[in-house]
Length: 207
Ligand SMILES: [Zn+2]
Image (cartoon, rainbow, N blue to C red; front, side, top):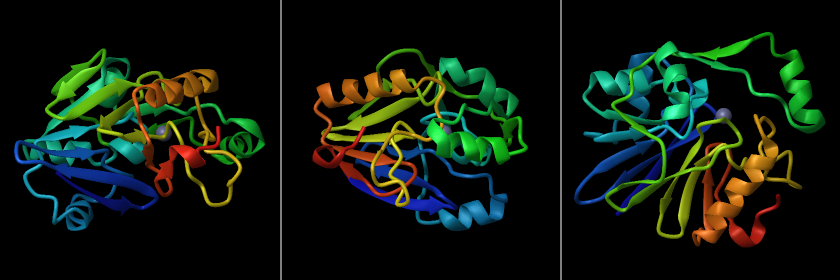
């Protein structure tokens, strides 16, 4: 098992390779097709693309990967958003999130639409990976658990300018976020790999 990551603008995406399959977790902010494939040129023959949720900085390049034959995986609560290429803007949390959202003129986030191939509604296994619904940041957010690691999208955010909390600064339901983090801890997760910022060990997690 090999885990690699690359940053697409400000979003970490992860590539997991085992003997049986090659999985990409998230696709980053929408780039041109050429620039995106340059960024991931060492990630070859991707079987599955699992989207932790459909915000544009996660699903932005999924359409290009579908064209290349990868199977796109999403939770059913966000299937329609993925197919429309538009996700509603999430509410800001606390002062910082609210301020950022107030100054953002966008009403929604847009990206090239894509039809998913696998739509999950509950805990789903793909070989060694366990896809776990971890709602809160969005209504269809999922985390990908591998042993004691969780690739958790925006369920937590490790922002250097906000060291006192790893909670996301945008969320549809922040109480649901906290329950979802607890769910992962109960599954034995010891390290969280967020899409924004460096991995966080459970001992250092601040919620
Ligand atoms: Zn997000």
